[in-house]
Image (tube, rainbow, N blue to C red; front, side, top):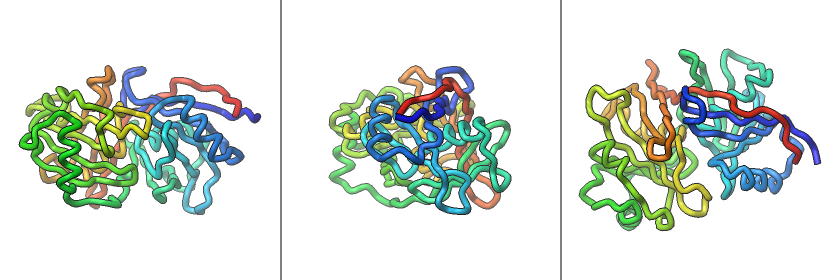
Length: 277
């Protein structure tokens, strides 16, 4: 058994305990896959991450990301929270901002207005949702088929399908049958003009993942922006997420002059110590 530095970081909220926490284990090169998976099940957070030495010389650190149900190639709030923890522990970058290596490849980060942000990774699957699968999703979420204004695969690694509804109020009113959700699905609807946030987002996961609803989701917001920003939604906007769960997530989406979508938010260390694994 070896002691490792440990951090727990709250992501996507400026208010304490109102974002999405990620557990971060530092110096995890000596841990086995089984140890990582077991610790992720034990924390029972939506994601637990492990910081390792990079194998790509262009990266500053390598990250492995686990849910209670298994490993993910990429996830957004763990990317921001782990970058925060790595920097707070004295990590130094080769360039102006960290470059993360993970299962999805290299992820560029930056800091703007005091917030960390990541460049949205390319979608690995896009396009229409199969009618049978869409029918399962509509039924699981308690929707009428006519309520779905648009649907698409928006998968940047975790496996998201996106559904667009007519309003934030309808998104907030959803009471899904979590046991019937067949794949990870993100639902988005607009707030009224002039509201603090442009849209409300919710993220529902299939039972095997071990997380019924993710409080605030960077990967989903990134892929929804790639789908909708500059067309249905503004090129840059703020999304609210976690409201139904008692959180106050705020996800900042910005499209730069080169067309790169950056997804960011506040990060705050809430726990620091050691863990014996």
